Length: 197
Length: 262
Image (cartoon, rainbow over the protein chains, first blue to last red):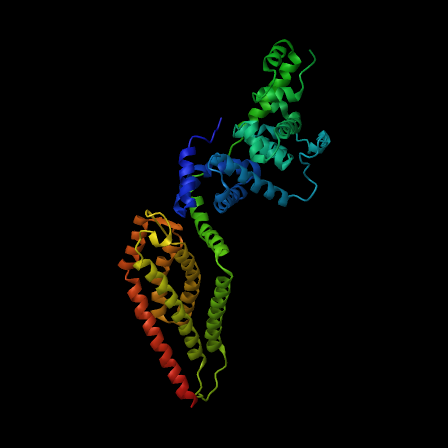
């Protein structure tokens, strides 16, 4: 499980120095969190260019809003929250209105039919690259919030409480986002269950 | 017990299940649920193993390099938000003046030349005059900031702060304003080919930058370093010399223009 509290003391010191006007003090924070942010951003954006852009945008926003960071908080969690917001903005800008169904849709009305995509022949799935494409297509079917919740829970190993803090959601809504995300991925890949085993 | 639903299985997978033992017990006795859980595990494992493009070990440095220039800009923006209305108008006036000089420069270069020279001031003289007046004013302000810092006690007593710290917020804000106009005039001097002005503005920039990017309150030691920087670069002396030259040129140009018009 990836936790981000190992460097808290050092993070707080660097933040304090940066706030005191030492711009260079921000540099170790960039060095410390760039790789992790890139991994998260890539899982959300799905391509390297957008992911790199998201990483830079996250640090710029963090720098500009450093005064709002509470020293008692976890700097990594705070960065993730900024990255989450940047990612959600980016995803929403890229897709036309109404394509995503967000968490405020209480019934989760997206049906299995919504997740369907052309069924590939079994031969296609023999190739791992094609399997990867299927998985990426499945990820694309998730709403931005579900995608973020899934990435944080599944890949980053964060707890529900921390994810709810990052996404600014209630605990129940966060659990629901993870659940719905996993459920959609399962449904999307159900035809290929044999290849996955 | 009825079959387990997806929500229970997903919660179990992530270790979030409220009744984990009961669910596990059910899995041991129910083949259908066990197979369903195994399918879930396989699907999620496939996503876990999905490759992520590797970044270089110095990726952090690359990101820092990419954003550091923009951090400068954002710092200037936030400092600009602190400057007074008067300062904003002053900055606008400086920008307009610099634009006039550049305009005069290009007008002089591309305007069709008349075959007969008149005695009135030509565009080159006009643009030089505008630049000299603006730079003269700019160097005076820079000199004042540098002198205030160079001659201050450094014990913070006059600024109402603790003896260990020195408040340079006022000089810092002025240095930030001067930095913007310094860059504009330096570009203009480069375009008009005035090497002396360009050189002094180029030498002034790092000193202004250091002051502008210092914290509002600095320790006595940091303050001493700023003073040492001002003294060691001899920047105050250079500014005085060039400022004096600029005034001489300004007066000389005014006399020539006056003679030409009579």
